[in-house]
Each structure stands twice: as structure tokens, then as C-alpha cells.
Image 1 (cartoon, protein in one colour):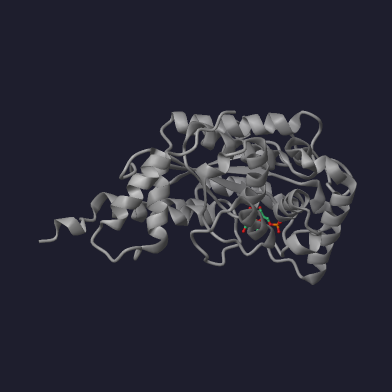
Image 2 (cartoon, helix red, strand yellow):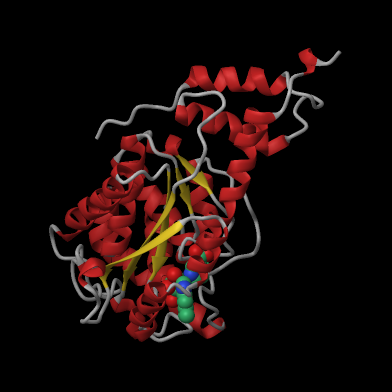
Length: 338
Ligand SMILES: Cc1cc2ncn([C@H]3O[C@H](COP(=O)(O)O)[C@@H](O)[C@H]3O)c2cc1C
Ligand SMILES: O=C(O)c1cccnc1
């Protein structure tokens, strides 16, 4: 997997151009940095318009939900897939606001009967309970990773110029916490949050589950595919593949919340350098996301106190990116002042 870095020359050219625009030096703050980032990604100053934004939601269930680690029952995952198809999920509504499209993919939902276009990449029904067994059987992590790459390829071949990963899976925040803790060598207590809104006892069950999972897994987690197999899920693997393929194809990716943060840590291990193609759309309230973003060197664009997932935070960063592009494309220069 060859990753070509974004263009340093275009970034420099953008920074020089930004300094010459009709504004005090640096006065557009983060927008300037994002404008330069996009210029580097597109190797063009100004960058091209972000007019084809695609969200891919990876849906799946987790064995660990039997330990009551979520405030909601596992059946919600399959029910929500139908909500995505109906076009009324949180991310779908927010995506419509910015003209982005949303597709949902069933990688491991514990249900039958979903439409063929949703199940085309299905790996299994639910994962193993990570506190006492591997999440995935041998080979499944790489199959799911390849599925995520193919999903990204299909969207890019169809014209996508910005990719957003979304997640739907009751129990996702427990699995994300385990993946991040294993990679960064952190204790469960530091990475586990309240997810969908568990109480103190619920959070204690999550900490116990992640602690047991980490103890069971040991050094195996050093290898990214072993980490996905032991502690992850088909969705985590597919999301990692999706992120890597965006980087391979040179298409920017906006990460969402806790699940894409955990997958991004895996993806960066599989394909070092891929992180150069990713932005962090927003700050989640989950602690594991903050740890993951810090390790990746990414600073969230927005901080709205969101804790939904699905890609809902990332899509809201899209107007900010468009604004950054517009600054470079449309502002006049100080040199032109008479
Ligand atoms: C109705 C509903 C819609 C959602 N959309 C995303 N999530 C989010 O919550 C879940 C993770 O939280 P936890 O680890 O606490 O289970 C994931 O499905 C995530 O995408 C939802 C959760 C619910 C209940
Ligand atoms: O911030 C997130 O990504 C998140 C938080 C809680 C539940 N699901 C997702």
C-alpha cells in the first residue's frame, strides 16, 4: 500500500497566498491551516471544490453487549440500519444539510433480511465477546479490511472527493476503548467513557470488560491485524481499510468520533503516512477519541459536545472546509489595493 504524501509545494504556495490576502496576517486562524491542508491534498491552489462528499456507515454488533456495556439493547443496531435506509437517521439529516450522501454497510449486524446492497460485504453476525474470546476468526480482519478498501474505491471511482466513515453498532464505544488502550498502553479506566449514556455501574462494567480483554490479549495487540482480531470487530477492520484506501487514492478523509479514531490508529499502523490524508472532524465526549487523536497528531475542527457517532460530527465540518477553500479561491490580495 503506497501512500504518496500531499504536496508540500502546494502547501507552501497556499501559505504565501494566504499571507497576501486582504486581512491581517494569520487572522483567519484555523481556516488558513485547513486551506493550506486542502491545497496540499489537491496539489492545487486554490483547492478544488468539495462537491461530492460521501459517508459510509459501517454497521455491526458485538458479543460484549451481553455484559450490559451500553445503555441500549443490541437490537437497535439492525433497527437503525433500517432508519438509515429510510433516510431519517441523525447523520442522514445532517448530511442532507451539506449535500453529502450516506450509505450503510452491514459488516456484522446480528440480523438477517437486510437488503442485498447493504449486506454485500457482510463478514459475520456479531463479534466474539472480547473479554473472553477473540472478536474475529482468523482471516476475518483482513477480509473486512479489504471490504472497507473496496467500499472506498467504489465511492472514489464514482466521483467522491471527500470521504467520511460512520459507525453504527451497539457496544462500539467499548470496542473502540479496548483498541485504543491496547495500542497506547493505557489502562481501561482512562479510555472508557459513558457511550450512549450508561450510569456509573454501567461504566464500571465497561472498564471491567476492557481490562479483561487487555489482559487476555497481551502483546498480540502490537500487530494491527491481531489487534483487530482480538479486540476489534469487522466494522473496525472495514473502517481502517476505508481510511487507508482514501490515503492510497489521495482522497481526503474526515474522521468522525470515537470509532473512527480507534480505527485510524489501526490504519496508521497498517499504512504509515496515511494520517496525512485525514482530518479530525470533531471532538467527541469519549476519552478514547481524545487519546487517539493526540497520538495521531490531529486537532478536531469542531467541538459541539456530540456523542452520536454515525459520521454526524464529521459531516458538520464540511462547511468549514468549504469556507477554507473559498477564502483561497475568492478573497482579493493586499497587493491589489489602490
Ligand atoms: C438509537 C441510537 C442511534 C445511534 N446512532 C449512533 N449510535 C452510537 O451509539 C453506539 C455506541 O454507543 P455504546 O457503546 O454506548 O453502545 C453506536 O451504535 C454509535 O454509532 C447510536 C445509538 C443509539 C441507541
Ligand atoms: O462520539 C462518538 O463517536 C460516540 C459517542 C457515544 C456513542 N457513540 C458514538
